[in-house]
Image 1: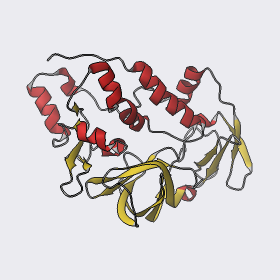
Image 2: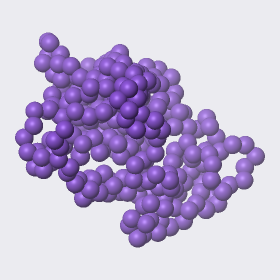
Image 3: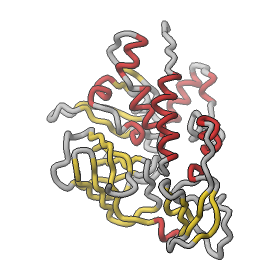
Image 4: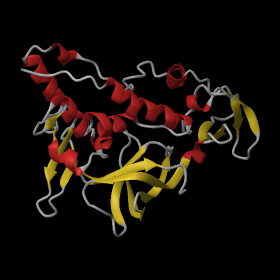
Amino acid sequence: IPHQVCDFSRHFAEEVICHFIETYGQGATPNPCIECNRRVKFNLSLLRSHAGEFDCLATGHYAQTEQDKISGRFLLKKSVDTKKDQSYVLYSLSQEQLKCARFPLGGLSKADVRKIAEDRKMTIAAKGESQDICFVPDGDYGAFIEASTGKIWPPGDIIDLEGNTLGRHRGIIRYTIGQRRGLGIAANTPVYVTAKSAGDNTVTLGPDSALYSKSLFASDINLVACARIDQPMRVTVKTRYLQTEQPAVVRQSGENTLHIEFDSPQRAITPGQAAVMYDGDIVIGGGTIMADES
């Protein structure tokens, strides 16, 4: 098959890796796959500037699209294989991007895809699964960030919920909400990272119960199934890629913000991650979880 190889490594570094580093430095936890899809893989202007004109863009994501017959909007839907569904990391695609997108694997299971590859004697049929970030294969985000920037993130105080100092951390980029291991703190009961503050360079620890919250604000929103949410809407929401959707009510609190109220408290809602809303198998939209309303 005639094809052209395009080098987007510089653009990937500027749009995805730099965003990843900046977000961690601000005390949040980003999802670089979402930024990569939005700014590189489905960046139609970038692709056309390198490869010329094309009619559609096909990728191996497990998701589906269709056009709503009433509104005319292009919808993003879950894949048939719900265990492999990747609609969560595609919620930020624009109407123009979805119109152009083709997901040929969306109607197949992963087992079906492997069988097709095996029948064609393709070596990739036996390729193992990976959940790692592609540019940090060993999972050591702190070491990667410091090596990439040449900057050492300073240690600071580990505090409890009352502000008492418990010890010292090794730089806030090495911690994330809900983390239990590698804290270097001796405690009689299990403790977890419940908050990080880049402003005063602290990591806060608390019991598991302190990780639960019933609501969140999200910014930098992208609505797929509708142009705007004019009244409270019942949805299900994922705040992490592998999380089971949870029932909630969403309100659009501003031009670029959402307020989501869950039916029951959710564990370890993490600033920087995405909150993605569904109505059945249709993606309503989503946004980036904020540390607070401001």
